[in-house]
Length: 113
Length: 115
Image 1: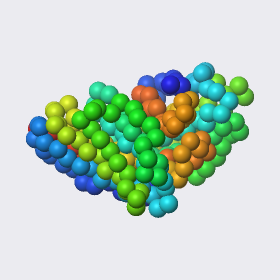
Image 2: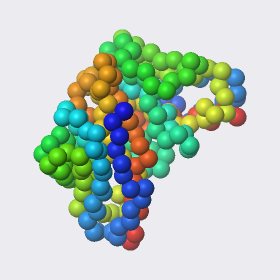
Image 3: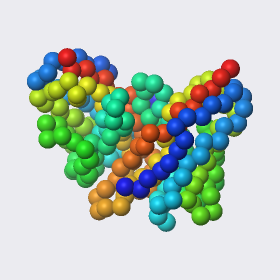
């Protein structure tokens, strides 16, 4: 399974930008990078995904390194509601018929008022 | 609201019993995935169905089984329950199979407590 590496935890103050890093050195040319977040006792929530180019949506931005071995999820202005565990994932399609998200331990983001 | 509906939201049952968890995918989605999340294991992929057919299996116990029906809803059956099966069970859906650009959306989960 393709692996990602994230810091266990990060902290931010409210209304400040947050940069959540992720390393994925074994990424293949066709792997998309997916980000989800999970609040306590809730289902994982889709945040953003991308292949090569940087991506923006209403929730966040995804900056992908030129060699694609790392990426950064950017929350432009953190709010208290952004406190969650953030997962950086490579969707596993390596084997025939395989299609699954492999969740690691993620980064627990704390946001302080 | 992701559009993925799971029932029941909470369930308490005794060891040795059998339960069925139900999932309705987002309208038009053909793929359904089941995940288990326990405190010590994190989110574990169990099984995936696409348009009624099993497509991928993960760490699913033999006591567990699933199916996807013609109307695309899915059920996860857990039998001979043990204390260690207590967990959050998530269903997720996507419109396609093996499409990296597609998005997988998760439901709110079913809390299973085995006593």
